[in-house]
Image (cartoon, rainbow, N blue to C red; front, top):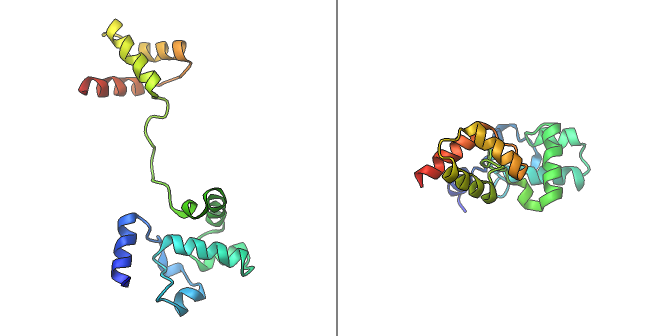
Length: 150
């Protein structure tokens, strides 16, 4: 794969190392045909390998690969939990309202049919009392607006 197309694929996938200029590990300068400092996943893997296989101290391995010691431990933990998939960054931001399960949404829908003028705070109280799920009134109000649009 040409370096330009590889960079483009990494960029589109959100896998570009945030500071490739800080990657000073020898492999990346001696074998640029294979090792690319822009490839965040490859850099993370090589950082772990430098420590585990080559015996480099954590701080040195992290610095040579453009990461901090704290980041090294996060990468190590993620790799231990999920293997290579753990080296991919998770999508940033929240994944959506965690407490709005189908059961909660169905309850809110039913409650709205019974009491269409109920406030978000009242509905949140009903959800907590009936289902044991504590919701903020704004979360309920956003859910109600989303249901009204459907």
